[in-house]
Length: 524
Image (cartoon, rainbow, N blue to C red):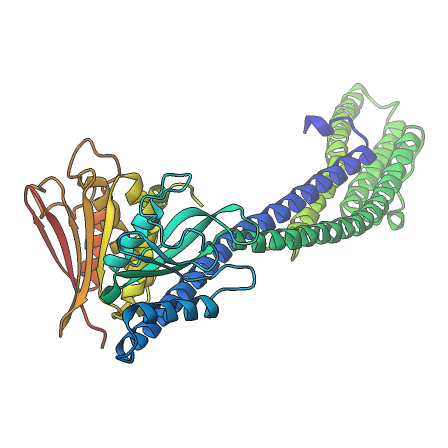
């Protein structure tokens, strides 16, 4: 309030307008930030969608080529030997696959790493490239052969020359094996394509942000103008009525006068007029009485003196009350400024507001679930358990690799389940997180999913230290090892979800292997 002390009404109004302008600027900044933040989320979604779509396309093309090779192999004429048949198949594949920009081609190697077919880089056909590495040290052909032989569903990321441009670019490839000839059939896609899409989106976002800013600024100018006009009108009304009071005080000190109530428009000031006129009338009447009693006895003089003392007190009260009542309309003005800002904050433009480490995100999800579980209804839905489990494993893949683990998946396809997606994710994520945390270095983490006639079995196997008390690990804040970090909430959440959904839980642990097993019911 010291900022407003001894200041004019105009000064206070200007301060109010500046405060409103600051709020508008903050609002504009918030809108730009929200739009940019949403764009980053959309970018990640676009990137994931693009990669998922390309992976499906790669699997489709490889499977179609394998079917073609299998068909030619099974229906070949006896007069054609394997060498001619292979040449025919390779020639057909090289002419049928590939895009205008040179990408999407099919490459073929044998299990020894010898290149059989590559329509783009054909100079080294017949050479053994088993030990070839990219600039990051990835053994490309060796890894693709391993993926094909093991029927591994993962994609290999490496750096490779892009057709036409010749630039070294990140590429994701997958391969499958044709066992009769010892071939691996593979193809992939380049990740710089999605970056081109994102750049296009970024340019569009920039145009949208410029348009939003211009719209907001235009609206701000309009509202600022309306507010300024309103403030000027209010200032004129208050100043005029204060001037009436000022003139009255100047005249009242010299002669008997009152304020014309019809000239006052503000309710607060009208109340003051009533009090002021009443007091002035009383003062005038008492002055008249004093004149009449001026020659009375000492007692009357003392009485009149007493009356005068009371009059002085009333005058003091009047001055204090007047000051208070003059400050009141100023407070009313500030209140209306606040109301104006509150209304401006409810403008329809104010409608919208990831963590870097995935393990922290998992802890956050656990805490979020713990907070919401008592007041949030987790509705079940029909889920593709197999696909969902694969997606969560893919989420933890890089974390596992960073801890020198490899996740082995044995997942039966097309297993459906009625379950809430958030609760199912908590079960999977906490088991994968604990598996990565407690598994011995350089050991594999095995995830199994299969179904029997009556149950669905989900297992997590790790090579880890023995759990001494398997009955307590689902208790709140329990940790297997004191030196391990974390809150110990993960398995408590898993235990609660399992009880809620009647899931049978079994934990087996010895000096070598620890197995967490979950038996779920088939959907009705």
